[in-house]
Length: 433
Image (cartoon, rainbow, N blue to C red; front, top):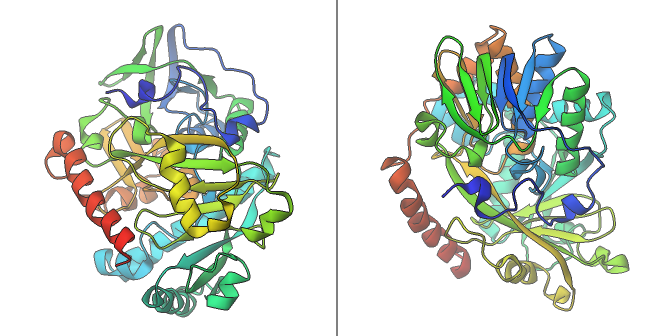
């Protein structure tokens, strides 16, 4: 099944709150005929557009090929949270890679957040960065871990932006009554993700990058000058950057063995008006400690944007039936609230939840598999890919040298094995273990 076309209309954004409030942008023309470029980027999400922008600023000729629209995939559908660090906590990274590498990965995370803020400001993008993500814990043990981790970040990494919260302090921000405490990271934040993608596209195009929408890549012919083919044309180039994330399909087996596409779902309520204070007393984003994580924030017009739930299959389920039950576990008082938007999207995970940086061929590079932590890291990944194309490979080599494991059984078996694992962990969520 080709996930590019399994759940969405060709060349159209999903019917999401983000699409309904997207900044105006003209459709970029499709690739037609033969073209040449220094670099061909496959995929116009955060990774590909950031790479295109940084390459174009360096004076290289760039063509970006996107099967649908800029920001069509996970980049334009996610929770908009610009989180700190990596998907794994620093103590886990220290055990896996050693202290020096863990410190370097933390520095990447800090740079990635700053890069998002800097790009929004430098290019006057049609989105606003808002600070703060609250982390809500269901169990007392999770609260203790949250507070200990805040102390560790301050002591070992000099990061003093995480404020531990007891149950009453968290309830003053998230007036739900179901959580035992947690923390708030004042150094993280949230944005309108599709408008950030649109802003990246506009900035890249203004610097000279050529963006081609409705240009589905069907094959890549490797060689000293790779050829990237679509149904209407082809690009001959010096380097290919794969920025496909969950929509890679069969373009590269080496990446596919390490990166798994999965689906996630979001709903948006009607505007809540004064009732918005029953959801979040401050304009911060939030997430909790469920394995199948719940994440939410308020939109500018006071809708609750709530993501969560799970499904097993590449086709999207009834999204409202999937996401509304976990929303009501957090906010039972919203049972009478209308759901105005419901959408799904495909992201990508890796075995150890670290991003996957690979060089499938000498002149082909790939970055993907952000595992739900991609708004900031994917943006930095594009910059790092651009550096590597220009011969500055140090940071790419660090990330590609993390020895990311393959999924057991390869692409054929990774999905059934994931279903088994997700079934187990979602059962634990339901049982409160």
